[in-house]
View (cartoon, rainbow, N blue to C red):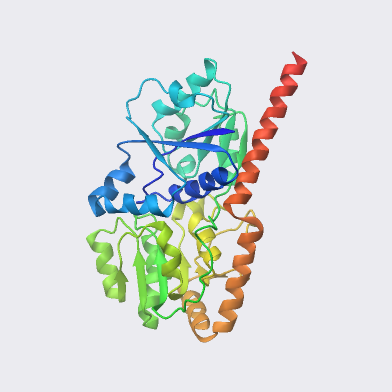
Length: 373
């Protein structure tokens, strides 16, 4: 089948975690023989910031890292999207698109498009900015792919769409996998994450900065949008700041450190239980021992305490980190359980299976309507 995707950016993951999952899904679809076109605006915010930060080199490296994937850009003010949809069987439009683009694709479907049309939501705006989400015109969409059950329910409760499915993110195990022949000798703790919009400053202080400082760990942080105050906090804790790193190089970094941490943003802890975000899937897939700040695994995606450790507060975070440093065999056993959970349930191949099942469900529904008519 021909799959068309409208996303914010495929080639840039600068403060754009959705690119991680998208790359894995698109690669898996292509590997199965499907035709995949991913369209992104030429002036995407993420790409613009990446170019300002690092220049053209990351785009060249991306092309080498993902030879199967091709970026197709369009001007943001495009009037007619129908040529992009020719012969499409399935079209997926991500929620980090302009409202106008979402409406235009829906209009093309209403005016004769024979493709299945899905909206993909991978963010917390259903809770933090419901007015913006309500403004999306989804009347011509077959439904919504929501990356958590609570988001799926919100779409239905607000009547923003007629149907919705839970479609969690997952690890691209072609890229994220345990290292071969590499030892964890560069440091104690690495954290990959963006500072962002002050959504977790207190949490980062309690679960990352203070434990590193108290235990005098050798630690590294990679990410973007760290203001001067944030960098000063890292320096005061004795943490090296490594800046932006392309996501496909994260497994290499993980392989050189003893452990990593997960510090979820406040909206996910307070209002969106069951959504771990992509970083948990990727860390477990790489086989690095993980310690997480509290979050509710409401959908039972993992086995907290077995696949990874959960710290209820900063004191327990320090204890868990000390235990991992002094019990490498136990840490390795836990990491292996995490890898096995990913391989069994949470790869991009699993999500493509789910996506194809949703398409079959929609086709059966269409056939039933045709028969009834």
